[in-house]
Image (tube, rainbow, N blue to C red):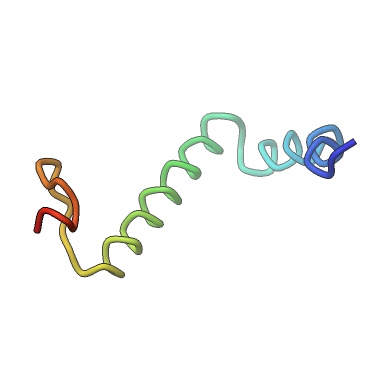
Length: 59
């Protein structure tokens, strides 16, 4: 059994969700953390995101 599977079956995820205040609060926090990580990633490369940008090779 993989360590990931052991962790999933341990009940840690369910306890973490309960501690966060439920499924909705947990999902909101995950969304917030992803946005924050994206902001740090953007700050690291010094560029603003441009959906029309084809990437660095087109700059």
